[in-house]
Length: 319
Image (tube, rainbow, N blue to C red):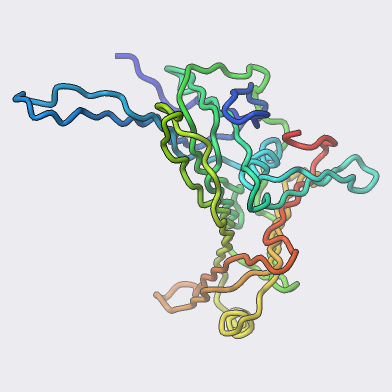
């Protein structure tokens, strides 16, 4: 019996100009695992006619959902932030050495999140998923490790796909946390790991007479942005606790990580973080660590989260 391993599988993604209309992917994702799956709902009439089993199983609905885990790379990071946050990519020149900054913020409460097409090569078959919307995106940045990304998607249908054969590999080193910087209130903290999660609180489209078998475009609800991190326990943790946990003051948070090529970096800024948890307990003879969590707030006209990607691409992503 022939079988396949995961080695050689690949995933590509592209932003759609029109939601649900498939496009050729233009970004290769450094895939570590994926769980995008087709699900169907089948039903019967519930007839009381005597039968040993149900007499029919009619197709009533088709949905697509799942998640993707990958290593975050400079070639794909800007598009993933754009798809997860919405809005537009604001491009600006960074100095005179050919670098550019791409700034992403959450789209407006009444604006749609962009759709994307995902193509997955599972070796036995290549599948295409159009009309995908990112429901949540998490960035995990651990000291001495590669930066990892996980995102959940909701799609429309599964079809036979085709890879963009021009996307063969990566030329820029991946982001890593060998020289990352984490600041709270302007003070640098020597943390061990951090996670930033953007949750779009997707609401599925209702079924209507016109929707047929496939679901419509989902809409985001009230989004949440959370930041969590771990740090060796010290008096700094107690200062953080007294300054922000037991008061209503908010903390400004900044996380920066880079590729080994310094031209490529990511800066995530949360100017108003409500610290919701600071813990530091003794659990054994080892190093004492503290875990902290917080949620980004919308204060006035200040953006709850801003992601700035620096690279050498002069054009806006998703344009």
